[in-house]
Each structure stands twice: as C-alpha cells, then as structure tokens.
Length: 204
Image 1 (tube, helix red, strand yellow):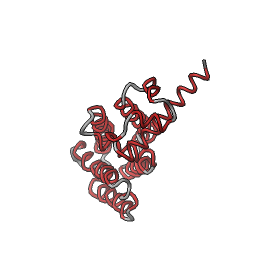
Image 2 (spheres, rainbow, N blue to C red):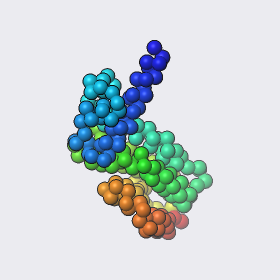
Image 3 (cartoon, helix red, strand yellow):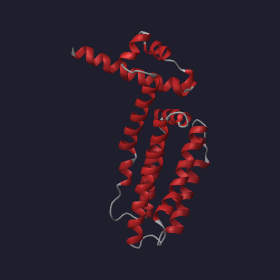
C-alpha cells in the first residue's frame, strides 16, 4: 500500500514537472492531457486519477508557486526593528532577484503571465501575491519608518506603490522577454539605481 502511495505521489509530481515544461514551451492552450500523460509515461486515462482537468493542473502549479513565494521572498519583508530604508531595500530586492532567476520560477512566471487574462484563479493569484501583499507589507514598513523619523513625511501607500512598481515592471518585462532582460547588463544597474534614487529622495 505504501509503495502504491509513493508511486502515486511520484506520478503526480512528474505530471506537474512535465506540465510546467510543456505549458512554458508550447503554451497552455496548445498542450493536451493526453500529451502530458505520454510525456510522463502513463496511460492517457490514468492522468485523470491525479487531476480532473488541465485547468486543475494549472491551479496546482499556481499553488506551488505561491508556496515558493512564501518560503523564499516573504521572509525578507520581516525586517529587524532597527533596519532603515537601505537595509529593507537590499533584503527585499536580493530575495526577489534570487527567486526569479531560478529557471523553474521563470517558467511558471511565464505560464501565469500568459494565462492571467483567461483564468480567474491565476489573475486573482497574481493580483494578491505579486501586487497587493507585497505592497501592503512595504506600506506598513514605510509607515513605521515615517513614525520613527527615518523617512520623510509622505503617504506610505503611495510611496510603496512608487517603490514596488519598478519590480512589478521588471517581472513583466523579464517574463515577456522570456528571461532575456535578466541577462541585460543594465538590469542590475537599473535596479540599484532605482533603489539609490528612492533612498536619496525618501530617507531622512
């Protein structure tokens, strides 16, 4: 029974792995359940023992991506009480860069970008996890800095939007260019310059 459960788990993981590669290479709409099953090495009917539909696979990929975001990026927003704007920017930008440079994360980002206007789950996920949650965390931290006189008097939510917008822009550009922009020699310079200018204009 245990071996059967292990094999089932392995098959499910393999389906996800294969689906990510195929969705990323060919596009979600161009891939069939039969094609995924063939690549995995199981019968076409057997794939439905794991996922009821192709959309269910996509939704599972979205969940996995969310879990990886929670593990890798969100801890960087838990900055120390004494950290100023410079420390905050360094920690969050470093965590973000390290996350999205991973090939698996880049592939999933590409899939989600392509499906955001066709799938409500994907759209809601991107809005919540890439825009709303980070913006709320940044805004809350900026508010603390303003109260402790480490940041100029400014609307913290607006400041958060200004700071965060560069990274959202970067994510979309990298995804649309399929990672080519990340290899641009100006990429690191532009990120660092954005942070420098923000700190220069908003720090006390």
